[in-house]
Every structure is written in C-alpha cells, then in structure tokens.
Amino acid sequence: MRELRRWGLVGLVALPLIALSGCAALPKFESPKLSVVALKVQGGDFFSQRLQVRMRVFNPNDRELPIKAITYSLEVSDTEIGNGSTAAPFTVPAMGEAEFDMQITANLAGVIGKLLSRKNSSDPLPYRVVGDVSLSSGFLKRIPFDERGSVKL
Figure 1 (cartoon, rainbow, N blue to C red):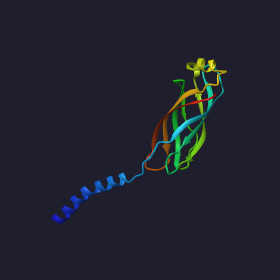
Figure 2 (cartoon, helix red, strand yellow):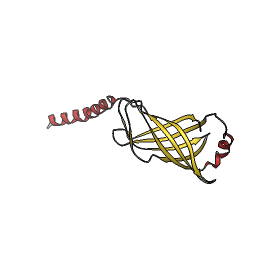
Figure 3 (cartoon, rainbow, N blue to C red):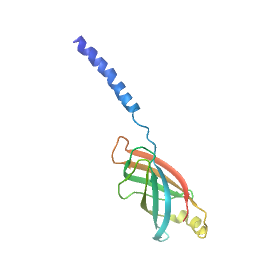
Figure 4 (cartoon, helix red, strand yellow):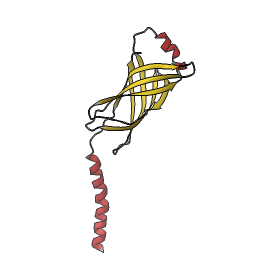
C-alpha cells in the first residue's frame, strides 16, 4: 500500500510537469496582420450607408490559418463607422495572404463632413480595424487584432 501511495504522489507531481513541458514545446504563434485594400460607398441615405470593404489578411506563421470568422469594428478618421463579421469561413496559407470582402452598414453622419471635404483629395484616408479572428480548429480559438493604416478612396 505504501508503494502505491508513493507512485500516486510521483504521478501527482510528474503530471503537471509533463503538461507544462508540452506547453513550452508549442511553437510561437504570431497574430495575423489585417489591412484595408479598398473602401467603396455602395449606396444609402443620410441615416445609413452601405460600404464594401476589401480586406487583406497576412499569415506570418508557418502553418495555415483556418478562419471561421472575423468580427471587427472599423474606424475612419478616428470615428467608428460600423462593425460586423465575415460572411463565410476561409483559409489563409502558411506565410501567405488572402483577400476577402466585408459589407458594412454604417452611419457616416459623424464622418460625412470629413469624407465630403476630401471629394477631390488624393490623400489617403486613415483607418483602424479592431476585432478578433476566430479559428475553426487548433488549440488557439480567438486571436485579437488592432491594425491601423490608410487607404485611398
């Protein structure tokens, strides 16, 4: 009986150490990089507008990303204009990129003046995309992101 207790104690100590060593062996995972490729106003009225946002996601990891969904909030010129999520799952290859479209129904009243004053401007428009990438498989299920950049209209 004493021998059984000793092995039970060894198991209680060894099991967490084995589990921790397994976690240490997991490869380092970098967050994907998202950027806005194009932003087009598709229509609407004063209270709501339909925008098509073409996005690019770059995977800096050595394994593919099976993306279930991307939820996001889009800011233009430091004003939130809309939020939403991707319509269908897709896969980003290892060390590769993929582009996808997102539809946003937004209220541009807060930035309409800024956009109208830029009508003939060729200056890029600053944006910020904040959200989460949800993976359909693997140990890590959600990856937060916060990306800034600029895009020409």
